[in-house]
Length: 114
Image 1 (cartoon, rainbow, N blue to C red):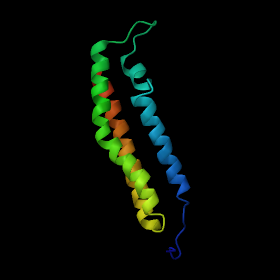
Image 2: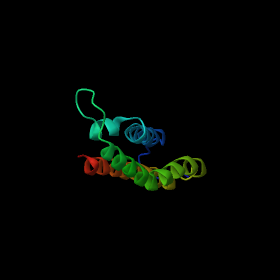
Image 3: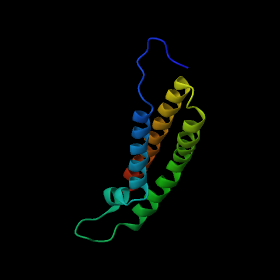
Image 4: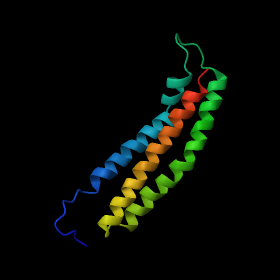
């Protein structure tokens, strides 16, 4: 279905943005970026164990948003290819969920700091 007289952005652009958000979340949650940013102590000393536990809890809470975002992004993109309006809504909602998941990781990491 074509949109009459409306500028159309290729779905590849928001899909690439979603992929970047996924990568940011993965590196923050599981790639060590978050632990280093919130729990690392200078001069190579080991990280605070309580901070690491709090950060891990934040990552677990962020999964509440990350899992639906992953499902929406993967399944919805396949199912909604023929409906540009629905695909736009889906990609926007998916990006919003990834941003919220990253916000949970950031807030939890901030609160876990000693």
